[in-house]
Length: 252
Image 1 (cartoon, helix red, strand yellow):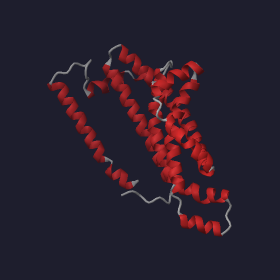
Image 2 (cartoon, one colour):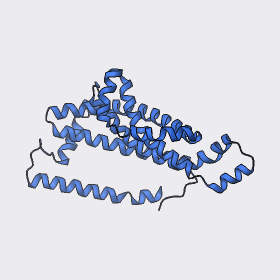
Image 3 (cartoon, helix red, strand yellow):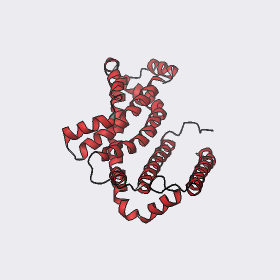
Image 4 (cartoon, one colour):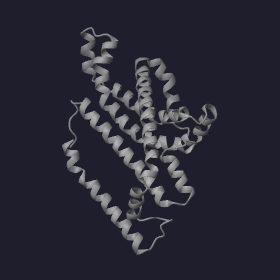
């Protein structure tokens, strides 16, 4: 964590440099605000209009947390079942991979037709986006369990349940958290896509209204809010990983 904080100034410096170049180019070439607003203008709009979009932000956060929680639970349960039941894994693993080849933007209208405009189709969309990285990462973690330790525990008379609980699951935790961090960023995107389809509030709704009224500055405010949410969500999962997986060596 300390090494991460020490290196954190580098991406911040690059980001500040990009904003500086963006601001300079907007002023020198006099780019119209409706085409590409300057970062300073986006900041002013974001601060000034906070009361008008804060409820959209909180709605997206709530939807993201619910969908991510369900997606995480489904992903871990599916991965555990596929690992413990090899025949089921052989039969269902290709179907899980194929399910990710269906574009969410195409599947989403069908979910609205089947389940209406309530919360359920939105949660299903986020769950579909989140569970796949968790399933794949967890299965990889289970497969990478130390074979010598596995042999030793079998020689000691450990049952299949004990092997899974005491050895395979703890060994897979770093991989599971890798999948969680990927899903955390995907969940925000999934929530925004779900909100495009007929929600009454959320960052996706705010972005749609801003785009239809040609308020490009508000569109960029929504984009930056989505990016910040994704980064904060990723950071929370990273901190949780440091608390739970204490035996994992610190990254250089």
